[in-house]
Amino acid sequence: MAAHLKFMRQLKRHNLATLSPVRLARLWENIWESWHAMNTWGHIPNQADFEHFMLSQKINHFLERRAKDVVGLPSVPELFVTLTTTFDLTPLQQQDEDMLELLAWIQERARLRHMLRRKTLTVEQVRVIPEFWRRLRRHTSKYDWLQFHYDGPSILTEQYFLETLASSERQGVRAAAALRALRRQRVELKRQQKRLWQVLPLSPQERHWILVAREFMYLKGLRKEAIFESCRLLDPFIQECARRLALTPLQTRQITTDELPAVLRRGWADANERFKFSVIRFKGKRGVVYTGRRAALLAKQVANLRPVKLSQLKGMCAYPGKAKGEVCVIAEANQMGKMKAGNILVSPATNPNLMPAIQLASAIVTNEGGITCHAAIVSRELKIPCVIGTKIATRALKDGDRVEVNATAGIVRKL
Image: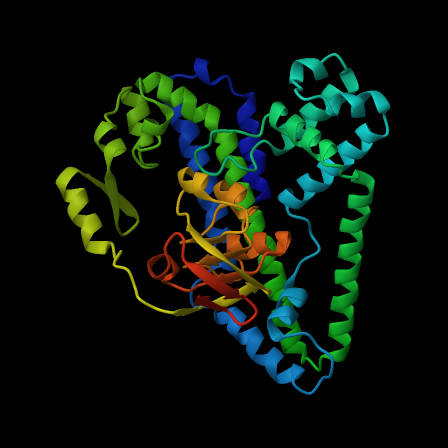
């Protein structure tokens, strides 16, 4: 992953507009080779637990046996979360800390603090303060990919981060105190892990599997973040391809990875039908794209969208806790407008594009996932009760349903 990101960051050195069609096509082939190698190794943590929960069930099974005779322990799901949580900060967590450090620096300077309290604040006003502008640009350059997902757009601009700082200041956030609290939480987590390591009669093999799960949690997050940073770094390449092919960037993304080199060499492509509706079907390693009536027929064959009538769903605990609220079903980012604070977010599977909705949720419920899925990772970071792997949550629940989520038990019950 590090090698791939290093390669992708070097794309900034290319003047893409000056490359011949042949050289641009070769560059894409090198990009895809690097991307493929990263994902081949990066999928190992996924396969250990996704959907079938083999690793999770193995660990939960021996934790149940080892914990039953030890007095004063938390529930098994809480033990699982505590023992498998890594101390390595994700980029999202590191961004939060860096933002607090920047805010703390501002709050030590009366002039800058006063500036943040203005009703309106623009980057033009900040540019006249060189040190502030330098720090803001550095923060943006480091983290502007966090919500890019696969196809953008890039919304984390200098203005976005400036408004975030201003909002925190207006809400009375004491940055230095908040930083100390975050660091105390990590110290407390280490203390809890050390205590559990001492009191639980775990065998060497059982300790090994807990450490494997902890490492996989970190590696899964690292792979996902490498993908999204890569997609952000790839965006200028897509823009250049779109310009040459007289397509929009979204249309250009309908061209498959195998097709793109030949398309670039001949200098044209027709992606209009694909952009309207298409289905890709893999035959071996090659994907065949269908459009029109054939695509509609294939989609109908594989889709299973019939509602399911159930009063209770069972899944796996990704982060313990309980919550009650109204269901809000969100499958794509363009549906987030209906999300309200306190809603129960129900989704096939979450992704970074849904973070604004996730931050409003009182609990998360997904169809898919394992302990290394996005919902599991982000629910731990935000401490939101989360049930994953229900298979049918989006078919059994609809917008407005009142539910009770007992994530500790992995149960979602209609009220």
